[in-house]
Image (cartoon, rainbow, N blue to C red; front, side, top):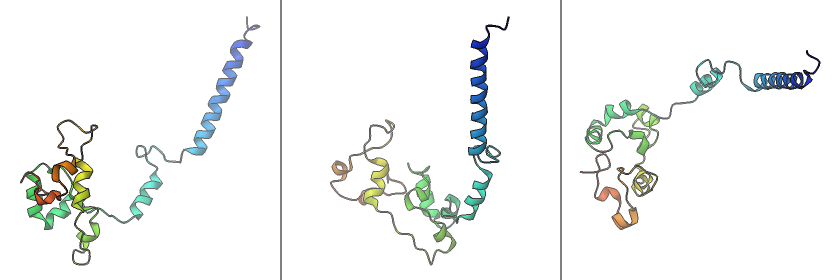
Length: 149
């Protein structure tokens, strides 16, 4: 009965050896604790916590810049975070007098999101900046926090 079963045993042995090799390599490569917190190494959380915060967050910005927040909330940029345009501002939020933020380069800032690109959603406001403004900066005609004003 098992006399001619060599053709079944050899692939089974190869499969088991391959599985064993895979498990050995996986044990050597995948860090311990991986998967405990989703797709993160627990040690990575300690590394991340050791780094200084660079973003202040929306609420921190609005504590001092309420007027700009209200203007933004009323316009098309309502869901754009402050630091998406102004960059990381944790240092400024912690010590406003010592860390004055540099105003964004409007010529490049608006173009980053609004330059015409076929890959963007159809309803997203897009312009060919050279044709649209003739070289005039966007904030000469548009308010950055509420561009339709």
